[in-house]
Length: 158
Image (cartoon, rainbow, N blue to C red; front, top):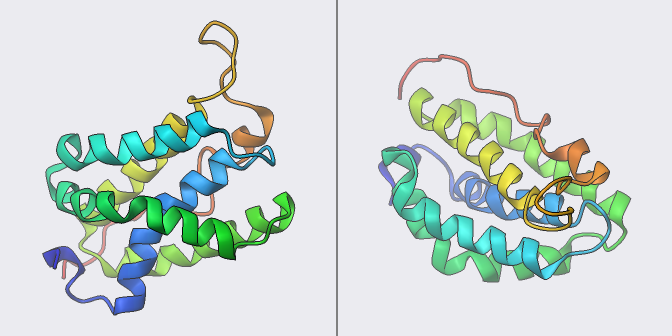
């Protein structure tokens, strides 16, 4: 087990592992449709993060990578099919992540927060656009900064 997650319940660990998947679903489905290029980019970025992310997050992404597609398909199947309802459910789930982030060591939680926001931008840039410009659609702009997730502030290290 990843040592930074040792103090979490199984459910809280699952919330962390679902977070990148939920971000992928939120950004890729923000316009009501899931484009193949966005889904492929989501998978590719998880792979890249497994070896090029903050040192304390590499193990997290290495553990997520082989299970990402299964998690993506599972959550896509159980979330509401309507765009508005799905986006609201994902937003609610990501909002509840704030409690979990506060329970983690500060440095890890801050790196996770920065990583997940960076992840959202990469997915948003995966589809659309004209000659590499205007790749982020209006619907994606609403969610790209993941405002429902609060940047961790310094707290006591566990």
